[in-house]
Length: 154
Image (cartoon, rainbow, N blue to C red):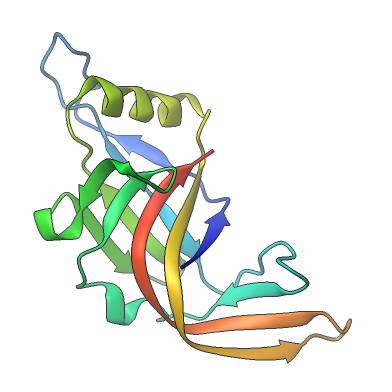
C-alpha cells in the first residue's frame, strides 16, 4: 500500500462545537484527500499526479477514515455511513462524522486550530502511466487506484 499527502485545507463543520458536557455535535471534518492534476513533491526520484476519475472504482468500497493512518483511531467508515467520499472537478472530497469521544474531540480541535491541516490516503495502484516532462523529470500519473483509507495528518 502506498500513501500520498495533499496540502488541501481541512474544515470542521457543525451546528455547534461541542464539549464533553454540552451534548452538541463535535463537528464534521471536510476536505480533500487528493487533488487531481496536481504534481506531488519528488517521491523516490519521480513526481506523481492523479487523473480525474482515478478513485471511481473505490467510492462504493468499505473505506475507513483514520487519524494519521493509524487503524487504532477510526474516525469514520463508508460502510457505517460516517464517511462519505465523492469525486468532483477538484479531487477526492471527504466528509467524516467523527465519533463523539474525548479523543475524537481532541482530533477535531487540532484541525479547527490549524495544527493539523493536511490529508493523506492509503491506496494501491491498479493502472498508471510513466512519462517525462520538458525538464526530463519522471512523472507518474495514477489513472486507477484501489482506495483503502483517508487520513487527516500533520
